[in-house]
Image (cartoon, rainbow, N blue to C red; front, side, top):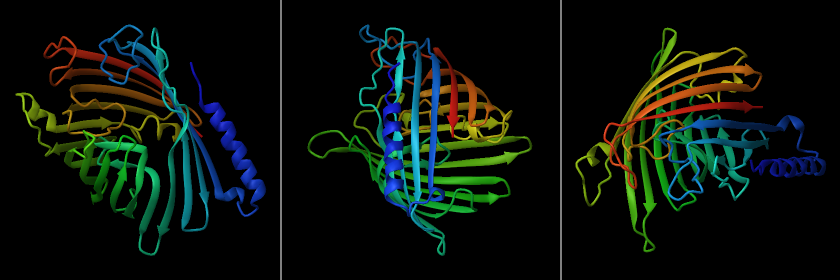
Length: 352
């Protein structure tokens, strides 16, 4: 399996060491370095995952393959209100039987931003390359690669958090978004989100614009947490087919035990032995989601069961089973209405 990140890690650590040597003002307590990553194995006999690596055989996707990435985060505290944050991403290595690794670019910075905290007014300002988490994770969850900035009142752990985002993606897309996260009752939070997303479609500045309106809820009940989200895209298209109206709407409902369903980000940080069971139903139209959390599949409806456990300090493992149905015709395939698609994903996540 091709690995690019060790070189990036070595160069970054050398750079950090040299910078500390040159600048005595950079005290070790002001510098925080994190390392995280995921190693996954996909058993995808029905090719549910569209990101599966292409086979060397024409017009085919591999059905069993490995997927992994590593990220090195560096956070430097300039003073009590200003921070510099960068993160090096290895890129995604995906390869399987008769499927060569397509990660030719290697490591890159997916985060590089300046953060200013105005504690007096409860405001946070970010400018640079960052990411955004909107709603309950179904419509948009991208931790990097958004060039622009954000303004936030409050924080996600406080009673009220309001964030506004503006930025451009590598493909020329423009994102404008407003996200409100509010505690509406003890142990119950609601979200309301608006996203304006412009996608270039020609060389003469023609764009397709998505306007997504989204509401969600997160309720911590007795021994279980309920999460749900509904999104609607007011985007219009020149030609509609009978199934197309359903493409603009999407929702999911999830019940889980334990502290989190973020198997790759939060589970490694839980105490050893922590277990999570999750059951989710999704019905997501192609146009009701832009960049969903990994594990959501736009254009499909169906169930996912996931079990995860923290197996060592900073390390967790989980296994997920999906049973999905396509909501509309699949291009370049022999589409069969109502056909079930099965997928099993096992992964190890680490965070230090």
